[in-house]
Image 1 (tube, rainbow, N blue to C red):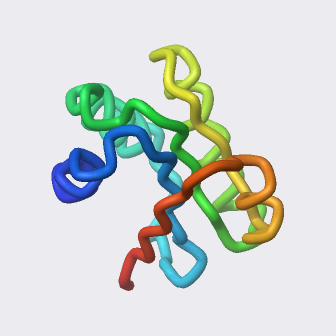
Image 2: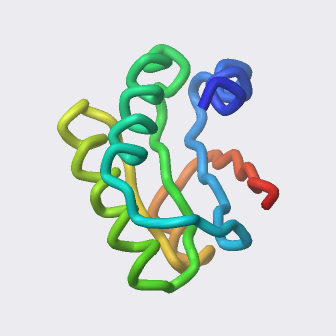
Length: 103
């Protein structure tokens, strides 16, 4: 999250789409999801625009992403989840920074 916040700081007024389609996860773990949400909240100043994740269309991944979205919504972030790049671009509108996460 720290590296993402550093990148976001250079694009303060832009939206960020994280392309996580080529990543894997080990297991469902709510404490890990909570930890990620808390880390993003810690760097709140860097994340002023919309945040979105582009995920594989996998129910396990979407379940975890929905948990993160609920936490992000509670913290007041504009956070969305997508499985289609085209829909992500359409719905986030405006200038979009795409960051592809390596495995």
